Image 1: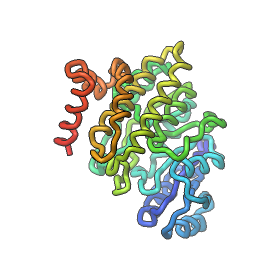
Image 2: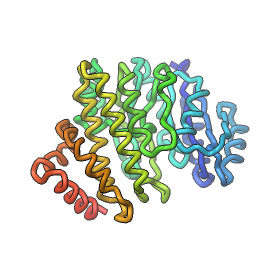
Image 3: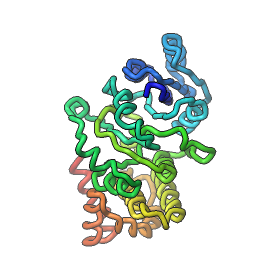
Image 4: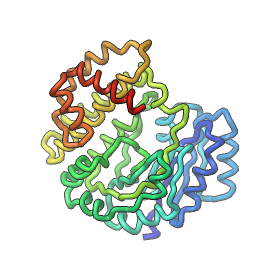
Length: 326
């Protein structure tokens, strides 16, 4: 299986503090047939120089320097030059915790020719260090059909919209599989398109991706633009459902859409009062039907409160809950 080449696309923007640790977690992987694509997205710090220096130390590292265009633009630039059979994204302020990660994925999963492999990520270092891989859960989720795998991913809360905790077959790529640029929450729409294209999706039960939450994270500064972009993404993924109404996994895809809807609800109750989003909140009331697809336990909880309290009531409950949770 060593003939399978894996491309790792790492967008880079002002991360001189973290870049070495990120790249080391890939370069030191026990599986060696890889290429590492560093996409410098117009960084203003020392990151461009660091990228070039890292490329001199390992001929598997390629560097692209481009004008700043945002995360989606950087990922698109990387996808255009990949030569691997599979590819994966790694944000440059994050890193992988298991140096045998790619070897395990290749030996355990790629032999079955999946289109997408989903794995775990967390910002909790303790979880990453102490978690024990559950192969029984893998066997439960990895079913013979896309419908059943989709169903198990939803029921076990293992299908999220992050592009970074998934390995993708390069065969999925075409002119319509690039990220939409210039928006926030770009992963939601892109993942929807990829899972529709995929024939075989698999799950690998281990938390190996450390997500470093920094001061620039969206979770620290939700603005009206964030909400508008998120709404646009939800509308897009719901629109895609029209194309798959006759597919046997349709219901489970709609559960994915419902999960994005509760993300919207969570975000609108935490936004600064100075940001006027009243019109958007009212508009999205028409999407409450998505809560009828509540097989996911988190969506189900919101659904139950919604049935009791209505749209405005669930917004009030979520605001209190999130305030208590901190």
